[in-house]
Length: 310
Image (cartoon, rainbow, N blue to C red; front, side, top):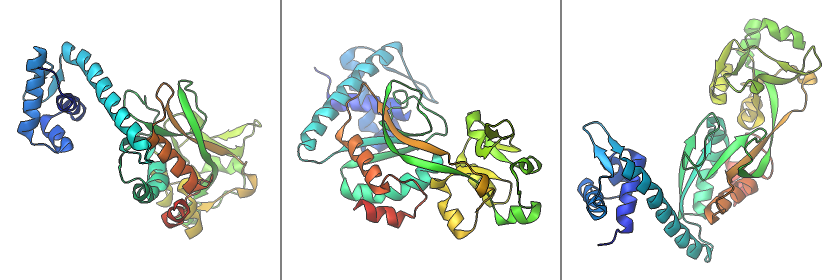
């Protein structure tokens, strides 16, 4: 008896989710039906693919080898279906997107509703990672990366540029004073990043003629965490316009040392693995993002972006 696509999908989903119960929920099947599919597959292959313990499921060596082939078959079928739908200009299937939490919250989330209205057959999976991830390992279709790219194995499309500004809350400035010169920053609580250290280079002239490097009093891996700390009056921060424009317009954050600030803009790019053909759903999302933003990356309200995208 031949292996079926449903059995392959059940196996791959159990591995991805880590349990038969979670796989059943994702596949919209009963737990017993999912378990039977997995058992039938093992019977047909005459091997054990997963070791079942009371706490978790673990791939056997045979299971690990078969998983690669199973994924290739599933992906091949997905591409074939997608190509047929693409002929009717109807991108479909799951689209896995990864971005740092600030970009996800301030840029992508406000665009989701409009994108789904235009492409209702695309299922979005949104993941946030503060560091750079391996797209293949995390099974990610497209990632948003801020700053210069170093990975030559990736294709990329420029989404836009976002300017950096040095900011503080009115409450912090009232309590600790308003720095009038760059050298006065050393007397203040500065908020910075864990890594990479290049993110702690601010768009201000340093004494050595290079851009100003700070020694943070508080560090975080997340720009959104630093934003919240700045709003709470914990210190002075340097962040991109796409996540702070509304704060500046409302007066919750104030730009400091504006006359000394250099025009430093970070490139924001959508990247995908270069050995994978750009599917219609990936292209549809990147095109929509560029169209909606109009090449600009401030923290505009969602309503303005939604209007621009329609």
